[in-house]
Length: 204
Image (cartoon, rainbow, N blue to C red; front, side, top):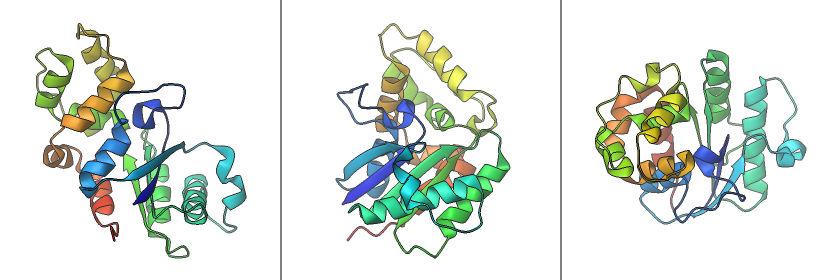
C-alpha cells in the first residue's frame, strides 16, 4: 500500500538531509495503526509541490492546503494520504483540517489529524516507552494535551539521557515502543481521533 505522509518537520517525518537507521515517528505510528507493511513517502506540509493542485473555492488556508495534498496524492499514484499538523492552540486551524478531512469533493482515502497542542505531546504519554528509549527512569508526565510546551518537555527529558540521541531519533524510537491504547487514552482529542481515521483507511 502506497501512502503519502505529510507533516511539518523532521521530528515527525525526518528529512532527506537527516537520515535515520529507523523509520521516523509519524510513518511508524501510521504503520503500527494499519498493522501492515506500507510503502511510505514523506513530504513537508509547507512544500510548494502542491501549488498546482489547489482546488478553487472558499475555505481557510489549512483547508485548501490539505485538499491540495489530497489531490496531489491522488494524481501521483498513492493509495492514501496521512496528514498531521500541530494545533498550536489555534482552534480555527483545527476546524479547517477537520473540514478538509470531511470534504467529499475528492473521494480519495485520507486520514487528517491535528496534534493537540503539538505532535511532541504524543511522545509524552507512555513513561515506560520513554524510560526504555532514554535509558533513565522517567516518571508519568502530566496531561500531554494540556502541556503548554511539550517540545521543551521532551527536550528536557532528552537532556537527562546519557546517550547521544537527537530529538528526531528519540521520537522515532518512542513511536516504536509507545503503547498505542495508552496514547489514544491520554491524547483523546488529537491522537485518538487521528488513529480512528487511519484505522478506517481501506487496506485492500
